[in-house]
Length: 350
Image (cartoon, rainbow, N blue to C red; front, side):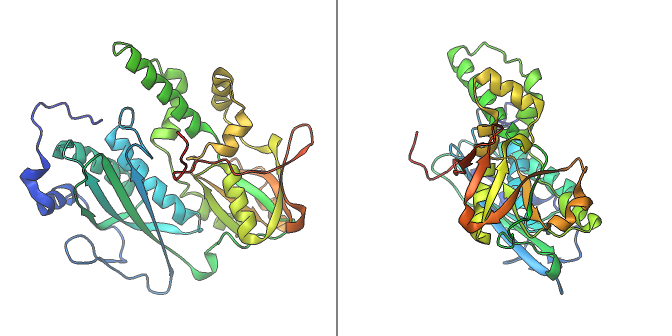
C-alpha cells in the first residue's frame, strides 16, 4: 500500500484534523501569481483577471476506482491529480490550482497519507499546479479522495464538446487501450498472489501497460501544441471512459454523426500482444477500456495540413450529418453502429 516500512506508525488521532492538514500540506507553496491566498484561511483567493476560469471535480473511491492491493499510495496521489487536470486540458485550458479532500479510515496511519500526498505534490510540481486547500474527515471503511481543479484559458481559446460540424476530422492523441490492459495484468497477478502468497510476479514485459494504469500522464502538452500549429479544435473531450463513449458524447453534444475507422485507431504493440495473450479483441479494448486520459477532438478539414505527420496526433475518422448515425467502419469496410460500452461506476453488474 505504501513504501514506508518503519515499524512505528502514527495514528491519525495523534495529530487531529487540523494537525493532520498542517502536517500533510506544509511543503506546498504557491507557484502562480493568480494565487492570492492558498492554504490557511476559510477559502482560497484566486485572481484570474481577464481570463476564463475553468473548474472541474472528480472523486476516487477505494474498491470502485482503485485497489490498494496493487496501487501504491504515492501513485494514487499522482493519478488523482492527473484524472482532474485532464478535464481542464480537454477544455483547451491550463490547469493551475487544485483542492484536495480525503476521508481515510482508521486503518491508515499518518505515514500512509504522507505517501499519498507525496504523489500529489510530485504531480503538482511537474504540472505547475498550486494546491490551495481542501478538507479531511474520517471514513468508516476505505479511502475516499475528492479533488477539485481550477484552470484558465483565454476566452477565444476555450473548446466545448458541442462545436463539431459534419466533415470535421476526428483526431486522438497518443495510443489507446494500454491502461485497461495494465489493469487486467494487475488483476490477474492479484489472483495469482491470493492463490500463492509466495509467488513473485514477473512484470517486466508489461511495464508500459502497468505504468499507463498506475501513473497516467494528462496531456498538458496538447493545448500549447495546437496553438503553436495554429489549430483550434471545434470540439474536445478527454478519453476517460473509453473511446466509443467519448466519441458518442461529442456527437450528441454537437448533433452530428460519425464514421470512426477501426484501422486508424492507434494501438501500442504491447497492447496488441497482451490482448492476444488474454484472447481479447484489441479494437474493442481501445473502444471500451478507458483511463487513457488522451484527448479526443475535432478539427476543420482545412486544418489537415497543419497536423498531418505529427507523431502526437492521429486522424481516426470524420463527423457526418446527425441523420447518418454513429458508426465504426471495420477493416472489412462494414459500418457497425457505435455503442458506448465504457466503464460505468453506477453499473450493478459484478
